[in-house]
Length: 71
Image 1 (cartoon, rainbow, N blue to C red):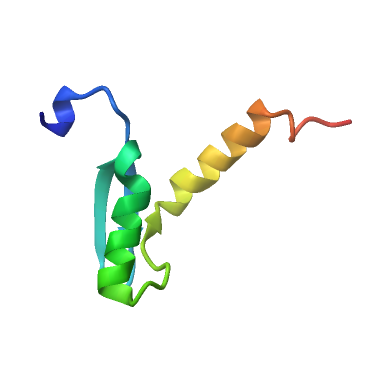
Image 2: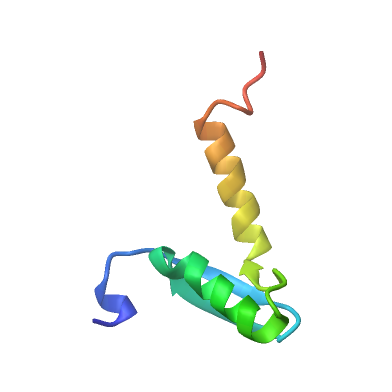
C-alpha cells in the first residue's frame, strides 16, 4: 500500500549534513532516523524531524497539557 493510500500522517525529516529531506510515516519515524544516523553518521544524531515542525508540535503539546497557561 502506498503512502497516499494510508491515513497515517507523515513527518518531514531533514539531514543538513547530507543535504536531504524526506517524509516518513509517523510509525516509522524513530527507526528511520536511527537507521540513517547509524549508517551515515556513526550513530550521531544529525538527521532530525524538521525543526519548524518539531517546535510547532512541542508548542501544541505544551498548550494541550496546559503548560503555557499563566498561573
